[in-house]
Image (cartoon, rainbow, N blue to C red; front, side, top):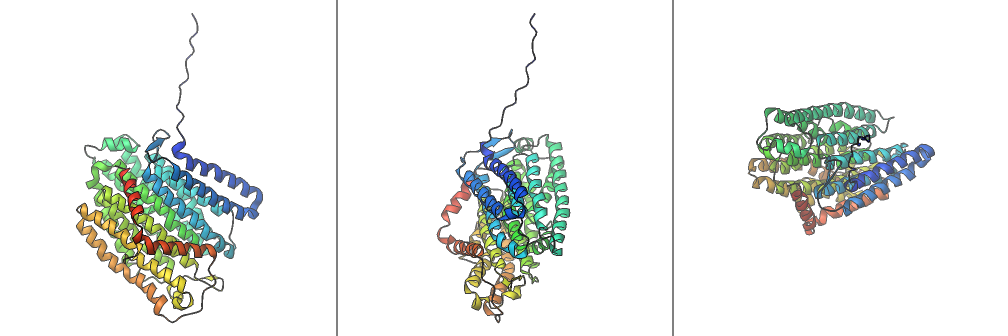
Length: 485
């Protein structure tokens, strides 16, 4: 009798096309690490440009990906239009943050090759978060992004505020990660699945108390990442203590990824129990708008003020998620796209506040800027008015779409609260405009670096002309929202 040989199990090799941008970034950043280790500090310029080039290549790869929904890595990673849109926003935020950092870090004497590498690593984590299709992928992407962010928060290690910011971010971030992981374990325990598809099927007929309890912990962990109240306590200190280009990065790209993750988890894994999780989102939204509107009134440091502005804006964006509809998700996409441009432009204006080589961060330092720097004052005032939601600036349309979605979903009270708190928040935005336009001028700022001036110009142009050309953004946002349903 011939001897029968047992056949080895055959494992399918996952198709790597949907994750090609992330793979290119991962391979490229390993090359940058090797080059930086060999060349040392002399490699800083080359590594920075290499990192920007890598991110640009990844952006192009994301854009040319097919619009059809594709999964890989055994369903743990998904590529669809929703993911494409938020990856584009995230990559733009990372590229601009690197462009803003080079001159600033060179002036501070901390221009090292590790920074662009850490930004690229964080961006890979953010892109995994956006495409995560199960709870394990969510945690992997979140931790990759967070670990790099903890380091760059304290990148100016000779500055006590920067090291304090990194420590606070790390301690509170570890707590938030623990909350999210505990919630994910509860969801897995009560549904028997870590995939969004399996969870969706398990809660189709209703969710048990254990699932809802786990979802509360997951929401708490995500709320930390998007700086939503009551898990916002790290934001003002980290925004103020970290170097300004790092703050610009934190306020832009990670916000895109975390909001995309929140929308995908709630809309993709728990659509059948929208009435349960809507209560959580409404609570977080109202509290974030309250904190962002009232806590910023007494702030004199411009970066702390922008931190509270960020908290408030996340609250407004969550109104769209609370709606739980296609129009609501469309509103979230529109809001985050406009918020990204305004935030990058706002922090570019803050980076222009330099006098005698020293960075200035007090609101009063903008006194009389209209006379000394009319271009800067005009741009910054436009961004502040836009963040306040005053027409015809871009920020008005951002809030309009989420308010309409809330009203159509029957959340009229939430929309009314949002409108009232928009009026309250307008106080501190208008105060900045008043300081620039009406106060007695002080000494002029130093010349604005070219990358900073370019970002201000692009952001201002977008802010002013969006009302004429909003149709493409609205259409893309609608397609992205429909891909989740």
